[in-house]
Length: 365
Picture (tube, helix red, strand yellow):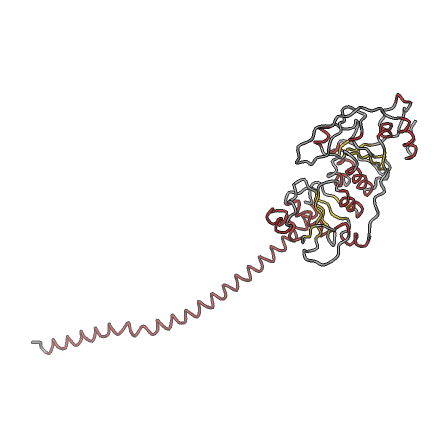
């Protein structure tokens, strides 16, 4: 039996227990209210964070594009390739019609354009300036863009024709970044070609082997004791000269290097090619295996201001005046070199050479 005192104590204990049980329940409302308020704060914070991130990303993109534009401008001035040069409309037409060197011509008008192109650019590959590095940097991208057209070899010459020369220069810089060092652009851009209409054929002058032999001093025993100085430039590849010989006294500039060589100053030209750069009034004769590359070289030289350019008509194939200079069939750089062809050594016709030189306005004594 419990006493009244015990009952009183039991009631006190029960009340305390009830208070302990009820206390957490009473605290639930403020806690739930705090969580709801916190949920609203987190959403706002997340939105502000995303907005700040978006602003930073946009700024980064704008800065990246600005850097790319500046880099492109600098590249167009400084990294257009080791053997970079400019072509006149006439030289471009000769390149298209005679094919003196392996090349691709690109028009920077975007693919799908319906604009008519001049005759010089029929068959040119269309690529926008922005995609030049993409198509030249990947054979897969090239095949996708130009189905059926072989990917260019590193030694190929790439010619860019755009609306402006600045656009062409940026494309040439992109090509150089992909390892193509032989870039050419059309001087003045496409507008010059369009404004000029049909370009006239090059007015080239040829010289036959007997006249060149007289100029080279090979006819002293025939009474020719003096001839005006002349520079003979062989524009064949180095492998051709090494395998089949070259005309005695000929200097050497491969035709793919000639556009850039003609832009060099006299001192730099001398250091690079080991002979003095010809001046506007100097007599210069160009030779190759036949006369295709030499003819284009003479046009390039005339465009650069050399006024007295001649082309060896027979080339080294028809020289036949020196046993060390052998005739051979033409071949590509990647092909196996052919055997030299047998030939009979022939004598110089000094009188015919003198008469031809007189007709060319080149007197000899």
